[in-house]
Length: 496
Image 1: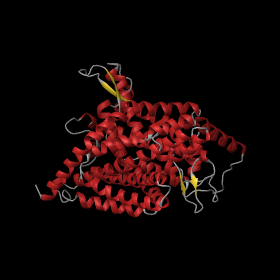
Image 2 (image 1 turned 30 degrees about the vertical axis):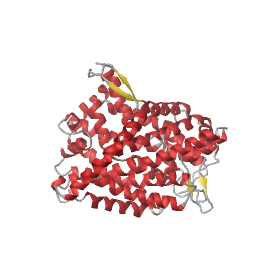
Image 3 (image 1 turned 60 degrees about the horizontal axis):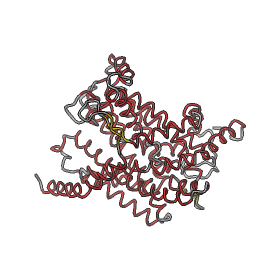
Image 4 (image 1 turned 90 degrees about the vertical axis):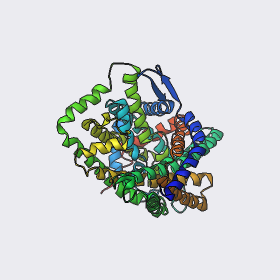
């Protein structure tokens, strides 16, 4: 073993020893699970309460907003196409740019690795429940992004800051809960910074670097000992984008997101149609598996939990992160971005996650227990097309990871700005630290650090969803008031 490897392993071990107790404690709180069944039985399952928290909010807002996730989709598409955009509206980016920035923050390695894990554990039926929750989650995104625009702070230079920090502080103050709002806003900002540095950065850099090394010959290949250098390249790329703020990020994501989504979907479709004869059986497995009768705990409930969990963890509806990006949109109507954000969980979960699920179900790679479930399972599915096809997956992984990093850098920067009264020095300091953590993430395994940061991301959902419930009437008034103005002709389409 070379000296650099020894040092890296020593640092890995030191970080692990220091972080494990903290990560275990925080994760134990955030991911507390209700246990069902006998621990010695195959029907034993654990149901994370945070998943119930997120899915319950999605169901509530779907009903409370009268199924805008169905009736509002056409209007959402029209908004993204710019049919209602006006040049004089306040904000920094277009509806399309805001959408792609938010999607880039949610479409990441979870869409590739996480879905494969869900199917491997819960079976093909998990796909059905994943789609159901993706559909319901559209309503939660609408609620939080409407508030994000309504309570954003606009400055004389045209820049804006928004997201849960601001609507928790100002929105709750407007209904007489000023002290609670300030506490929840600070908690959200702290959680957001932790999540941005870890799950939104180090984990993405680590997994993307691993994929690059895997497709170039593994640890014994030409890049096996160059993790640090790959990390520096990632950091330079991220730094070059984020130094310019949301406008720079939006210009990159509006190009990367459509390309990476189309590239990945084409790859999945190639896998699906190269195994064309297996399609009917795979669809049957998904629908039958969703309602398997044997063993209530290990059967229907177990499959349902895997689907719910993957959808909730993939699209981050209820976490509040996306509303930070959507808040920068050019609009004078908060509900417009609520409608645009409906499309985000649909693209992330209903389309991209479903593509992954179909690929691993149709090829049967989800049954292979010889290797760890995750990217390896999806890569094996891609390999059924041609031996070189996993390289296409590696390209998608790198793009997914990079786009996630630049979006989460913006979320963390805005959270830092909130805590330090929009200090340019504090925001610049966060950008520098973020790039340093990119290199660290690519170089080390960081297991406990990632567990901690994942907990931080989903801890964001606790103050955020509390705020959404308390401001539900405000959300409903904005959404239905806007729809009424559109019907009356007050907001007419702009000639293209």
